[in-house]
Length: 111
Length: 118
Image (tube, rainbow over all chains, first blue to last red):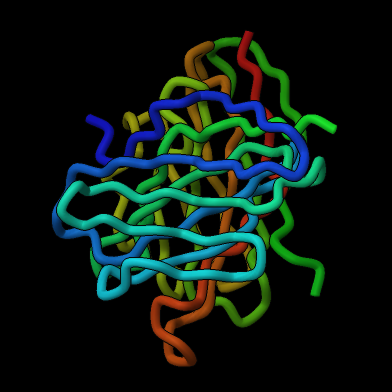
């Protein structure tokens, strides 16, 4: 039973365009959400997070949007760069340090 | 800081053998997590420790899996006996206590151990 779902296993975007990665969750108790990026043969690294009291958080080229009523969050990367090519994991927690991760979306940014 | 250290990086074993994965967390981190990554299920939390004490092991798939943290700088994940379906990448992660910024601190992952059970 996947509480955090990333329904798109892969995404290809042209360099300079916007990348939009989506994530859905089912547990209404989740109050903190994160995105991690993973390169091959490396561990995931933290990218950006958002608390449930906000609907948007921005860090440079990366913006995370949260729609609590739809139980949906998205990561926007603008502009996309070839170095952004990686697997992106969405994660959620419910007031603890226990993160529930999705299955990941592989982003390929084409030069 | 060297980051989270995991060994071995790759392990190939035969079905029925015992496998031990090792992790050294970042010094000063109070929490340690073990994850398994597969294509079908993504990153699954297996177990996590706080100050060397197991807090939640609900993700451990079977009794064949066990984890220990004998001290603050070392943890093991053991599979005995191993089966082909255990083939995956196993990650260890650590994080500090949230006294500095609560949930704004995050988990720091090691490079993972790729396990193949033939």
